[in-house]
Length: 128
Image (cartoon, rainbow, N blue to C red; front, side):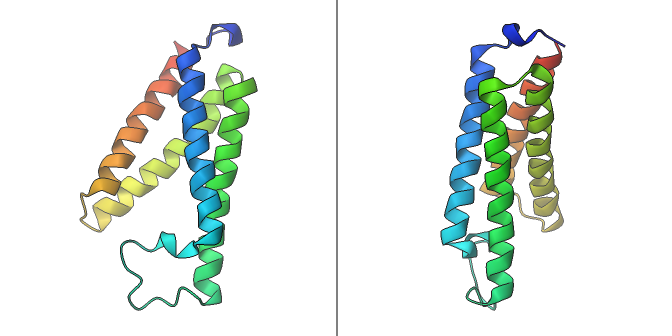
């Protein structure tokens, strides 16, 4: 594990950018919970309580991961940066598996793979 003073600035910046993206996505989710339904809401009552609560849960997850990433980007030790980045990486792995199970190799899949690669790089960088 590297010393906290040796964390590269670009790692903190990338972690901060992921934090802002997660926070933005989380905040938008509170105002438009239908965003959890891919491309179409056909057959889904997005005004119903179930869909709204699912959207709020999804939004709160993204917002909390974003806040955690922001805190570790600013104040975090290498261990903290690695741990919170691992949580975000698990979300990307989930997205990859969902797309594979749906047999959809689309922009969501590619984005998840690219973000996962960046997150793995950050995690490895904290240990080397």
